[in-house]
Amino acid sequence: MSRARFSPAAVRDLNAMVGFISARNPDAARHVRETILNAADLLAHVPELGRKVRRAAARHAQIRWFVVPR
Image (tube, rainbow, N blue to C red; front, side):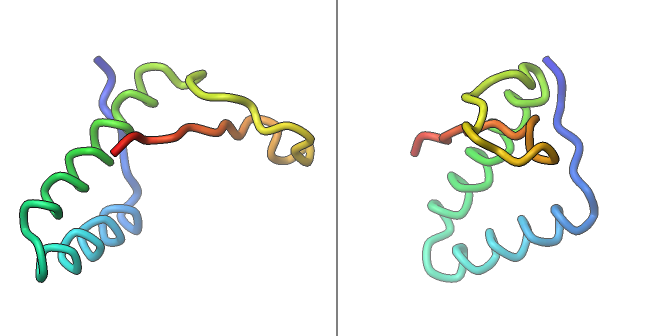
């Protein structure tokens, strides 16, 4: 399966978010991190997953709507 690649800014944002959640609930923080990474890997493997956004501007024509379950 393909692995997602993240920009340095995305890694910082993810780490900051997980750190914030972890201060109150470490288990939830681990779950959030795992869910995000698994969804990113799935999208890297199947980039056409999700619905195309209707009436999107031309510059956003490739954007898809993908809901990550809890």
